[in-house]
Length: 202
Length: 156
Image 1 (cartoon, rainbow over the protein chains, first blue to last red):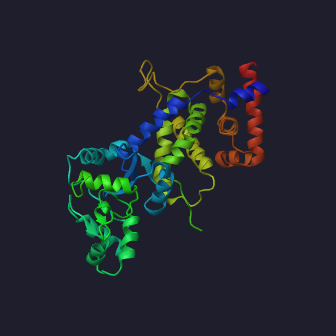
Image 2: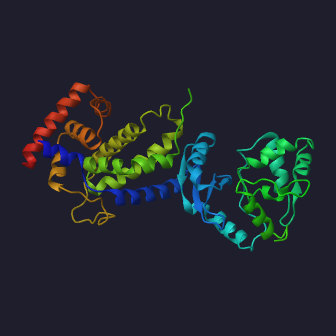
Image 3: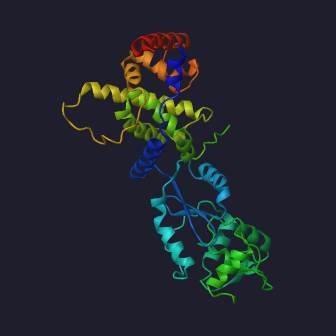
């Protein structure tokens, strides 16, 4: 009797078959339009990036892969719990990012989904999105263009919680005195991006 | 209270092996993969409207059980022509002790559900009853009857 119950409980090793079945499920889910948030990991010179998109466009780019679980939980809560890892859905942005990091691309064509930002933050980030490649702006200036030149601190907070860094180029916003200022990916990354774009000397 | 649903990918990662094992036991290695697709697609469709996230595993296995039963019924209604090579043959789910699992699938439906939900799904008798319908007591009795039949059929 004991052996019968043991065999019933411990059936065969299905890890590989289950991984393959899950891969096919993801393909079907994409075809059937059941994925509200598709995400993938992308290699970059600054480490692994997490990118996520909705049907409207790219909704999140995150620098620290160790926080991926939190980022995805947040997307599940704020956008939709139908979140699946579907790398093929992110092929276009992966290619554009590769070209950008190699210095072969100045502007991104992938549409953006702005649903995670609202109000003053959204105005700050939309103003930031218009700073051209190779240029820089200041916190004071983007605050002014968002409608309140004195709200420099609020502008800094909006840039600090930018859900779409690189694409909404918050790295192009520097301190009024010429200091480089903070960056979610680290100050070194901010310097490297501005150097890549030719906005500052090496 | 608002429900905090984890990203669907987390469910798929965490439960894909046990859902496939459960379906292999219920529907057989040939049909488990199809049932797996139907189970997770149905789950994905219903997921945003789910109001209780406290037992996602039980929820998935309940859907899986329903899909296996549907599959079984459609099989019975239109049997496959003899000699046809089933689609996807060759990459079906591997299974140890095929004789035992054939015997499991030959059990009367209520016993089969009880055995698979209890031993393969590792569910409590209360959960077995909610999947199979009927009382907890009936679920226990069906599992015990199923085990007796299997012991005889398997001979170990």
